[in-house]
Every structure is written in structure tokens, then in C-alpha cells.
Image 1 (cartoon, rainbow, N blue to C red):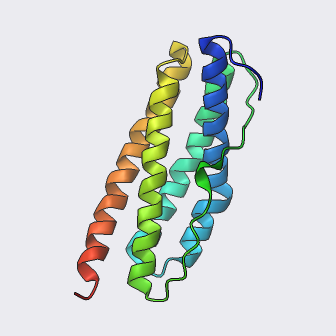
Image 2 (image 1 turned 90 degrees about the vertical axis):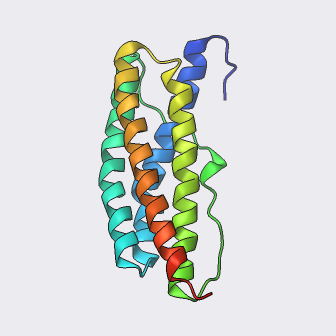
Image 3 (image 1 turned 135 degrees about the horizontal axis):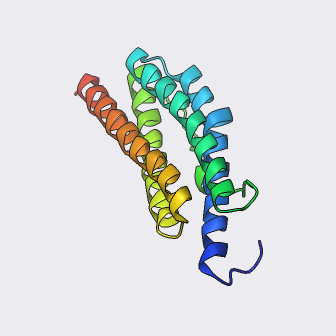
Length: 153
């Protein structure tokens, strides 16, 4: 990683991390979770968010171009998978919902950081993603609440 010497450098570094996160969600995390979750409502919510995530990738790439930079992804360890051995389907779905909520919170925080540094044309694209991440978080939180209510007491 190169040294950061100005706000643009910080913006591009954080945007590169966001691009890596969105691409990893698109190609690895969400497809895996969709395949593992037995709960149909949560699986549909994750599938819907996968469709949104594909658009998020395109917007982040366009934000790079709007900032007159080539899209480049920078690996970050924030998506390190949580290893769980959960047999009960509802509890497993709840664990996935918790992980999804954690990732949504992280994405919202990262979008907040880059939007404040972004050129106006890029900021508009990134703000769309941020709003959709907030909506996705609300859906995941509703699913988690529903799943918690289905657990035996």
C-alpha cells in the first residue's frame, strides 16, 4: 500500500477497499450464503441483495472513473468468514443474518467515509449505494427478528 499524502489518496484507497468488498460479496459471500440458508424468506432477501450488489460494483467502478482514476480493488480482511458449525436450520439462518447485518453496517460506515471525500459526480453514485445498503440492513434486521421469534425458548 502506498503512502497517503492527500484526501484524494485516502478516498481512492477506501474506494478500492469498497470495490473489493462489493466484488467479494457478489462473487463469493452472497452466493455461498444463499446456497447454505434453508430459510426461504432470508434466502430471497439475500438473493435480492445480490442483485443490488451487482449494481453497487458497477457504481463504485463508475465512481473511480468520475474521480478520473482507474477502478482498482484493494483486499481488506474485514470480510474474514466466521466459522460456525450450526446444525439447527433456524439458528444457522439467524447466524447468517447476523453476519449479513455486520457486513451491511461495515459497508454503510465505509460509504460514509468515502462520500465525504468524493468528487461530486462520484459522491452521487456512492450515495445511491449507501441508501441501498441501509435498506438491505433493514430487511436483514426484520428477517433476524422473525427468526429469533421462531427459536424455541
